[in-house]
Length: 300
Picture (spheres, helix red, strand yellow):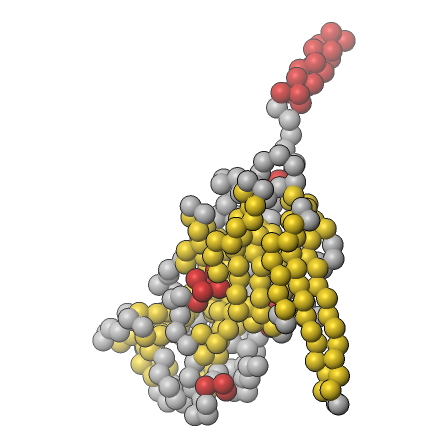
């Protein structure tokens, strides 16, 4: 019996030596927003030693009478070498590993406004998202992916983060997501006061470049927040079985709300809602100015 136990123990040691157990952390998606003045270590090029990354931000207050303004300066360094600097812009930096098979991590530098001090990153406006690739000891700016996120949408008001304190999210399948704020042009006032909704837009990393994921429909993440602002029809509207089609699916009556779970669709530069009625049947309505009433929504 003792010999049998010894043989089992030796076999177990051999398994551990030759087939080491992988850490669960290795399988997790890397999508981290870096904090200011803290040094992080990531193996960006998946070669040799880890690189040290640091985001430094200075904020100088200026008073002119009763008006207070701030001078913002930001720098990003890799191994103590400056790769980015800016004046007067709010900056966020993220490290991601969108494609785990390409043996390359991504550094994303976000320029925008409205995010300082807020946990709800979706409230910010990301004007630029600069994608850097680190190789051969150098960081190279390859793309502004903010433009790619907006490419397939009309009347884009701004670009937000997807959730909480993470400006962008990944799914571990070569894809990264943001929240696109789309104006609905329902207001009779100027464009600044247009009502809006937020849709989930994605990019796919392919051969070192981010390209938009084109889809027949996009998930509506919220109208205002968590669909708490009702979207009400001003008149009876016919839903059709197809976008731009003539075959009737059902009628939505004046005063009814657009149900949560509806989808945002684009065809031939026209916008449609794909909605499901109370009987569980799906249909498409073309979005036209003056058709809907957004009860109380405001966007700043």
